[in-house]
Image: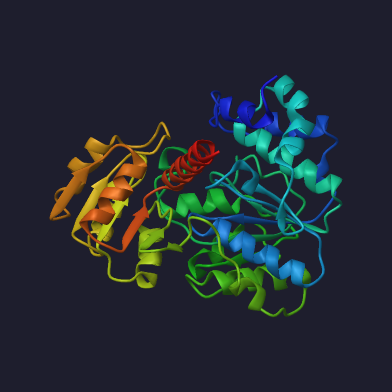
Length: 370
């Protein structure tokens, strides 16, 4: 039998019959509805969800709670997605615990991962779960929780074919996860009327673009008392303003995300990027061009990624120098030849590909040296 990781990778991440919760609810019922055995903080929004979730995890743990955290996507390994007690859990075991029921239900990749996390949290008897939504909110597989607090980080145009054509429509879809007793923490004050309309028991406003403040207010809303924000400031994630020698990696995949990271960057020598075809490609390129005049187009392994040649064609109106290199590692190497430091961006899938290539290179060197 294939490993659980190999099985997960073989599954379709997108439902062939449209988005909805019927299959997810049936799967969880077969597993004994583990999601109802602990209170949850549900993190929705366009950008910053993983960082905010990890910061909330750190704040709750500092207050003595055993916390389960579910994130997506991953950068280095699938195990990044399911965390218990501040560490990655046994991914193979977590997925194996739901595989039989999931195969019987015909669950998608994301539904399996979500069910695995929710069951693992119940088995570990966590005091709280911090759960990052996948796509949207209303029909997302995570919209099954015993939700005490909802966090909306921000709203930008994304997946408009599923979530709606306007920011208002998208915000409604994301805030549909609110439960009647839920407190709601907003990173953008304009959504307060929608949150109240959706039934929020309390609406709390955080400083715009400040993940630490957002996480702190979420933890305080959940706990009911003031907490020290220091543990949140110590959190760092792979692929989120991840700094290496002469290189910064960030999975910014929307114009808003690029605008957020721009003030945190040094003067750049070059950019290497892959962008998914369903993103605002021109909007991303326009903002990236304000950071440097040199761009290397590549493509990630995600089926929705633009081919490197197409991305290069669309980048040429914005950059003085554009080169094409389909292989991610070679693209980053070429960007370093053209200037430094280098920003590697456009998609977390690109960063995941680079991580896999680097791990494979290490394995090969180890074998040769042995």
